[in-house]
Image (cartoon, rainbow, N blue to C red; front, side, top):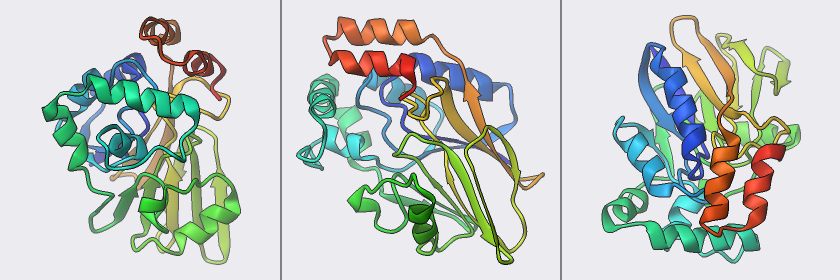
Amino acid sequence: MTTAVLSDVHGNLEALDAVLAEIASLDIERLLVCGDVVGYGANPTECLDRLLDRHPVMVAGNHDWAAVGKLPTESFSDDAAAAVLWTSSRLDEPHRQALRTLPLEYRDEILLAVHSSPCAPSEWSYLVEIDDVRRAIETSDRPLCFVGHSHVPFVYGRGEGQEVFDRRPGRYPLRPGWRYLVNVGSVGQPRDGDPRASFALLHGESKTVELVRTPYDIRAAQEKIHAAALPEFLAWRLRWGF
């Protein structure tokens, strides 16, 4: 069984369609979304519809809840808050209901999925540096935890007195008895200097997790942000990957 794990689509339809096209050629049995389908980009409802049509497992991101009034935007940057306000004005009631009812966590026998951190999902803390990741993995009640939120992908694993921490695309073995925390990065707004869409694959048969990068039509996504009169910075950062 292969699970595709996406996060932080942020209304970027071009990036999402490129990722969905890539996973369509694979034997994907489950789609898991770690939050923030909306916010920043110009196609919030279209992105939400694309995903809901595929019946994914989804958890809430801070932008998802902010867009439906479940989370205040005082801690958001000015550009992020402006995008939340714009996004909220585009949502109809079915879309609002879909976002409003998203849970903070999903777990099964082996994995936990949250948007930000297993420490306290409702506090929306960022996991970027290894010390933060080490603390967070202690609070996960499953051997494998998937997160997003920081828009920076990585695989962290620990066991047998050893640890690995790697940000590079590629496959990583899931060793028996080890614990792992994987940030799948961002489909719609990467911030690690690589502008390509980022997501992950969990390969059940080979017991590996894979960080994947996919190119998409960045200019088209930028032009839509300009046309919607969203903050200019939100368009330019797509090209920078930061």
